Image (cartoon, rainbow, N blue to C red; front, top):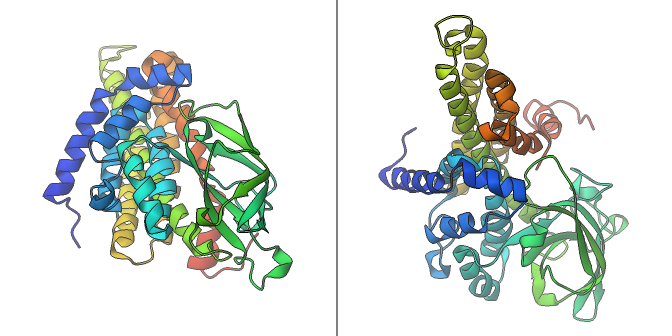
Length: 390
């Protein structure tokens, strides 16, 4: 068991660290204020070969693995972007890259992977619904056969990046629950254009992650061609899980980078700040202990995430590890950003000092892309052998 990065992985980490520093805290504060998509950042990430890190070289990728991607995201997030960086990797290398590379046709790969790798094409995924939430098997958006294609009707909620995307991975039912023997049957994936007749979307005002819009999506008799099916028609549940479990890995990587950035900002401030005497406030245990606790927890989350990524690259199950890493990372990041704000006192509340943005953005990941309660349900049932609790 080797816990050291190899030379190539260290080079990727170094390149990502330098790139993240180019787009530092001020860049991200400005884009957060303007609610602007960080297009220049993403294009630079792709130009460095990181955006298509896990995709084959034949389609413009770098031919590396999820572990290399995880390492790179940590460094990019630490540079200033925080957890939003993990979201950018969800949209493109995961929703687009994993879905197309593993389950798309050869025509899809040739057409869509090169612009994905270059950053010229942005993706999003329409999964969650108002009445289903985390329970994907309860979705009601339905694609009904229509000649050689389908007609899609329904509504999706809290869909990230729609306004910036050109392509959307849609999760829909193609068989009614009463028509199947198992609840996991009757689920299909489609890859469609965002700009399409019958598809409308409206932005949701929210607390954070302002550089990436969130939307409600309406499908009103949207036509889907047969060639836009991705994966196995009626039986894409396991294929969807591949997308979702890799989504956990990039989420965790973004949270790790965010935690380390917040801790650095807090420690730098505490080492300079002096009150009620000559010693810096960093010498007080009341300041040290919360920061140290977050540091310890995020170090454990990193190891679990690296195991998940390594298992993924080795072709062995990684769902448990990816969920455990995400659980611990989201909790540690929440503690770290709150402790950093508390360390700075009133200045932690000021956008000038950046941690309020880091806190606002990371807070989403206590309940997305899967809530910690659902992860604990999963652990209780599948790891501990307890009865299903929901």
